[in-house]
Image 1 (cartoon, rainbow, N blue to C red):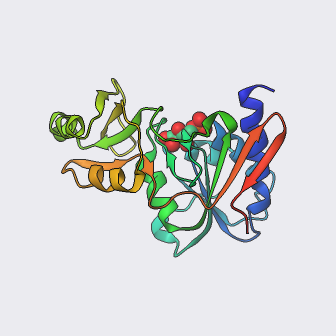
Image 2: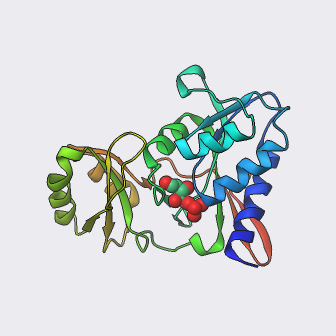
Image 3: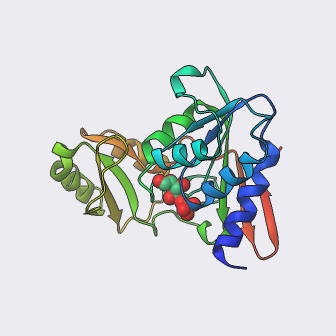
Length: 220
Ligand SMILES: O=C[C@H](O)[C@H](O)[C@H](O)COP(=O)(O)O
């Protein structure tokens, strides 16, 4: 199976967590795009979606799925999204598609974060994938220097402006032994909007796709 077929398998498998009559939190990226395709098949049974990026909003709109702003909802039962890496504690690196800030906000609101990923995203230790950090433009050089002090090698993602009008630094050379500590430290740097470490609030359920099928982790 190709990687995209695995992404499709987990995207469609997430449909079973969608409850009728609810507003669904929708992530960003190629795996989340498959989930949106699946969601479209039940669009008359849900109230609508809250989206984590302009790209996902456009796709949802294309299917005629009603979009809500996060400020219009008090709660969300689920948030379904991909990841760039996920470890055995359900902690993740996200933001390869630069949508990390809205993703983290919607994830915070949702009762359950359902991570959909192909098995190549599973790691023992986070950090092989460069850690995305969204930064206020005027703080770029300062934040980069602080990230170097933390042992990272930040690289400016050329030509990318986030949906929030900010920049992305991708931080290499990190072997993240204590993800919560690093998330806290990077969050504390003035000028950082969001770090793509989802450690304090990781996933609740992970659907992992491999040639053997979709494995569910974390379901009680
Ligand atoms: O900013 C993008 C998101 O965090 C994505 O969910 C993540 O990069 C995974 O993307 P994909 O499903 O395309 O591998």
